[in-house]
Image (cartoon, rainbow, N blue to C red; front, side, top):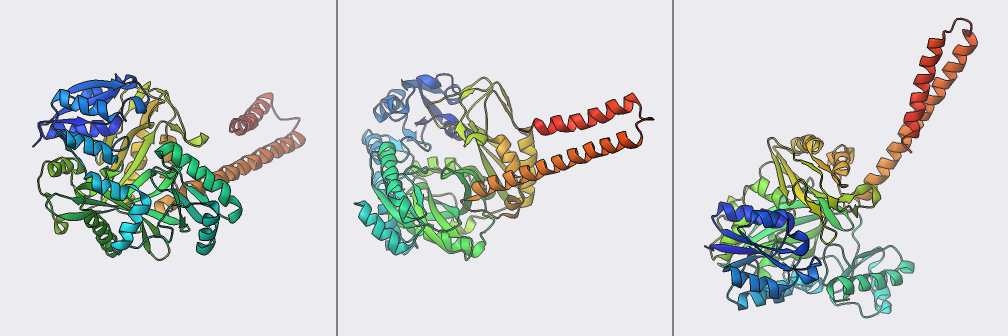
Length: 505
């Protein structure tokens, strides 16, 4: 087993890995940019080293500095977390070339699954269903137009090298195709240094369901079930669940077997996630992509299966066999995770950086907060604004929703805007409670919210009109006996309602 591990990441995922290492009596090494000198992961680690200026291109993406720090600190392994260099095959080659263990899959597996087009080819060869689409990058607008016409609209343009919703465009008709293609290619080039884009048939109202897989160096491959990830903004997940409200044991088995086939096809080692689009109508499913790393939403799988995925990653990287077999995995209860971001939900989820002036975390049974901040910490403009992965567990989905509702009321973050108020509304939404989810959920939810606000406004206007009419009738019928005190009370009541109505706009 390793004695010391360097964590090539920051924020809440670095803190999560440090906690697992502490339980395993492994020393930890943190790296940090100038902007993160006072960050929580720096405070928690046994050792911490600066690696550059605030922009990630000058710090967390500088593998030369990270490897130099690993050698200087005597770290025997590097855990990449997620994001940054976690799926960079060349970084893995550089790390292992220095005799340091990389906690994750091989660079060849990363190369094979890192490109969405190559991943589609591998899935097809493995007999896994894929969304109808191209297996080569589009070479021209004319080709895109011909392919889209053959599939029928709507279609989805996707960056081959991408992730996190970058380089993706939904195209409803041919008129929008040219601009969408140019925008997708431009965004892909800026985000990944590769403007390759392919096209898929868009599945109407799909669910985004992923399967957690795990493999070791001894040829063992298993799946740990599914996570429902349909609630997204800008193609990025904000709420995840395990298990999915849609899935049953048979669908889980079929999707799990397909995910394992993909893992076997590339001799995968470590934790990975195979993502699918699933039709809400007939439960047909299609391979989407594979993430060759740990996922943000891994806590919900841990809560339901009882398996510590980070601990298992470290053990597998050290050469151990998986500590469980497929038959030994069970799914007990239900878990829900909310990604608490420093974002303004009422302003298109724009980042809300700044100082956290107050932080009060929920407590009680079945509550877990994987955070990366503290009261007084600064949310930087340079990085992803996620504050924590907040999850709850219940014996049933209904109990988990009740627990999340209660816990969100206790969760307080001051000084910045967060997604907490948005989540408090989501858990009260009838469609969410019923499990009626798809990737367009947030847009539909916002429409329902607007309709509700309009309905409430109309009720207020009716009450105001009735109150005014009642006041006029009272003046006419009892003007001689009405006291000045009564008039003041009546005016106060009506005025208060008007003021309450006005303050909503």
